Length: 152
Image (cartoon, rainbow, N blue to C red; front, side):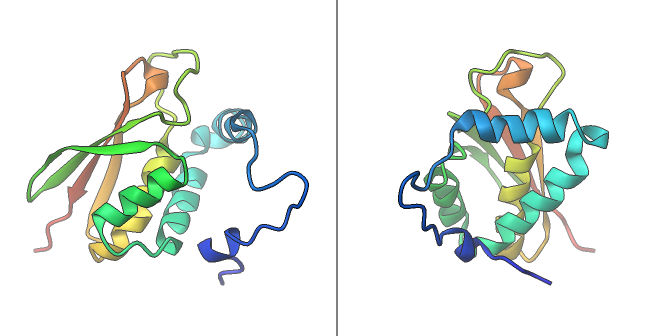
């Protein structure tokens, strides 16, 4: 059952405070509440939530999905490399940029799952998105590998 859709989330009627919340609130929910508060650093939750959000975005192409990613201020995605088997994307200005470095930690699985959910509809579910670099790990940008799943 889908109680809410991505289109529902656009219906904002906050006359005084408007349609934005501070990034520190979002970071707190993600990294204190979910990453530190849930088993497995919240990965099952963030992946499920991200995929559901991505699916409801109704992007019709890779380019449109990347545009939505930027419009939602998730980050600024750039295709680094693309071939018939995979797409390598770097995300500048990700939500985690500026946080303290904690080597060995990658915290942008929700963002990757949003991308996966959006692209799964475009590529008929035959993709997998994996975060391979993260600002929190000390990397310059967050990066994702989108792999096309071959059907036998």
